[in-house]
Length: 522
Image (cartoon, rainbow, N blue to C red; front, side, top):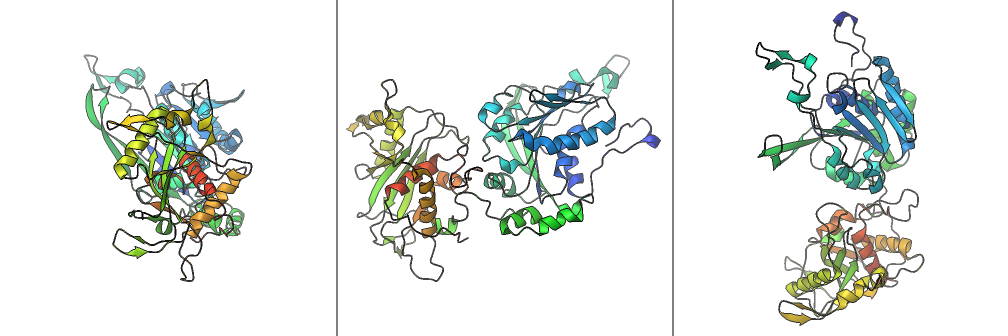
C-alpha cells in the first residue's frame, strides 16, 4: 500500500503483504474469502487493508464497508490496528467514535464501519443499505450461518462505471465520447477471518472447508435476470478459503509461538497451532456422534416394534415432525438382506418432515391444520397410518391463545384423499425443571450407546440411530453448538428445532438413558 503514485522515487510504503497467504488474500478476486488457519497469521491486517486498497481511487461514497463481530469489545483489536495503519496514509481519514458509532470516514466519501452482529434485530439495522465490502471477524463465533446469509442482501453496489466514474479520470475523443479512464465495476466481497474451534466451527467447516481444499475456487452459477442488461444471464459468484499460518508472519514474536506450543488441550492445540479443522470443537454432540455408528440405511420395521411420532411447533421458525421406531429386542432384516440384532429400547428415527423454506432457521408459516394434513398424508403413503402412536410434543401447542389451540386444531378429523381421517394427536413432552439440560445429557448417552463396543462385545445398552433419509437431523443435530455461557445447554440462537423434538423423545423413554459415560468415542 502506498501513499502516492505520482512520484515513484518518493513512494513511502505504509503496509505491504507478506509472502504467502497475505499476498494471495490481498489480491484475491473472489466474492467470498475465508482467511483461515492458525493463530497469529496476520489475518486481521489483511481484512482491514483489503478494504483500504480501494480508497481514494475514484469510487468515493460508493465504496462502503462494514466489519462485524458478535460483541463490540471483540472489535477493539481491529480498531487499534486500523488506527495504526490508516493514520500513516495522511489522507484526511478520521475515526469517529461515540454513541455506538465506530467508523472511518475519508474526505473522498468512503466509509468503513465496525459493528456488532449478534441477533436478527442487529441485522435489521442494516437492511436496505449498500455494503460492497463486508467483513466478519472470527466467523466461528457465529453459532450458525443465519446472519451471514441475511446480511448478503446488503452486499451490493449501485456504482455504474460509465455514469459514476469521476470526470477528471476520463479521457474523451473529439466528439466527447469516453475512450479511456473508466473505473471497473466495484467488487462485491465478503472477507471473513477465523481459526478452527468455537461454537460455529461445524457450520463454517461445512460451508467453506469441506467443499474444496485451500486455494481452490468454488463457483456457484445461476441463470438470473440482470437489471443492468434487462435480460437473463448466467451469473457466477465465487468462494475460496486461504490458509494462513503463524510461520509466515515475521512480525510475530517467538514468545507468542511458545504460548501456542504450550497448549495442552489437544483440540485447541490442533486448531490454533496447526489450523486443523478435523477436531472436536466443543459442540453438544460432536464428541459422541459418529456417522458410521449412528446413521444407518432404512429397513422394514418389524411388526412387533412400536412406531410413534414427535413434534416441535414452528411457524416463522421451522416445525419438526419425527417418526420413530422402538425395538423390543428382536432382530431386523437390513437393506442387504442380513439379519441385525438390537437391544431392547433402541430407538430409530425412521422419517422426518422439517418445515423450513430451504433457508436455515426459516419456517413455512403453515397453519396447524395444514401441518396435520401433511402428517396424515405421509403416514398413509408410508403405510403406517393407524399404526403410528402419539409421541411427545412441546407443551406450548396446548396453549389456548385467543381461542386458538394448535393441539386442538391438529386433533380434528379432516378429509384426506376423499375419506374422513382421524386427527393427529401427541402427548405432552416432559418439561419439568432440569429436563432441558438433563435431556441433552440423555441424548448424548443415547447417541454414544449406539457405538460398537470397543472390546468387540455386543452392545448392552439401548442407543439412538438415525435412518439415512433423515437428512435434516443429520444436518442440524450433530453440529449443534453449546451455549458459550452455560456449557450444559445448547446455544438457543442455533437451529435447534429437530434437536428439541428429539430431546422430547429421549426424555419420554424413562430411565434407560440416564446412567452412562458420555466420553467421546471418536
